[in-house]
Length: 115
Image (cartoon, rainbow, N blue to C red; front, top):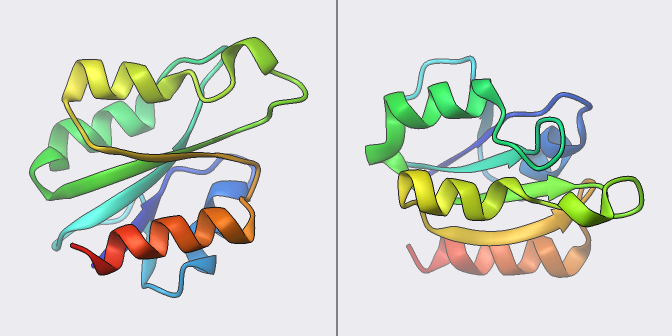
């Protein structure tokens, strides 16, 4: 299992790497099952890079995490989550703030262990 991230500021990448699994960017070639750590674009939208990745690799994505900023974007915090579920039918694992907390890491690791 690999953790794929779509990170503009580095926070999603930091969370992906904190899980202790191999990780890579959405820009790299994917050859195995993964979970996706992504973000919002604008005000609660799905980033185009995430859309492109999902369209190409939906069959390999076992679940996803969205990171956001509750202070700056309270109304649209992790707004991409319900859109990804609705549009692509992917399993939503968790919404996290920034690069996540220990409880977020533990919850996602538990999900990964149960796959």
